[in-house]
Image 1: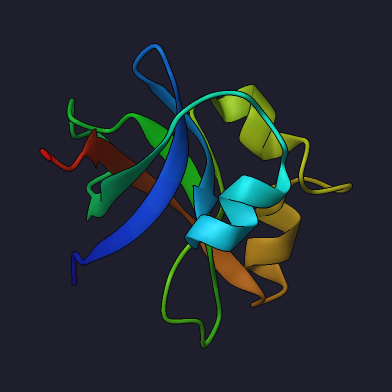
Image 2: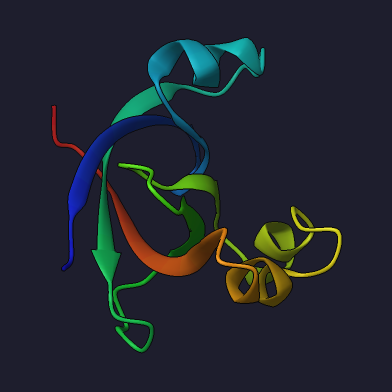
Amino acid sequence: MMRTWRMHAHDDEGVFTNLGARPWVKLHGLRLPIVPVDVRQVAADDPAATHWGWLKTGADEPSMIWPSHAQFSVCFPYGYRAEEEAGKGRAVRLAVTRVPQ
């Protein structure tokens, strides 16, 4: 089942980082604008995919969302595949778009 979540992110000239609830994004203390974004789960091979994220087993929304595979991968000391094999969650591809204001 593909889902969509409304989150906030720093907008670094069209690259969205530090996704989550607005207070979490603000906590990073960056001087980049904080904007609302739609985060949509997409198929792994969907060309609309812009980010990688982690959907923890039992969680309602993804976390550790990054615009590159390298940034996402370093979140896991033994690699995300080891965490998947242990049943802790799964990597998901996400399409992140700014919400028009």
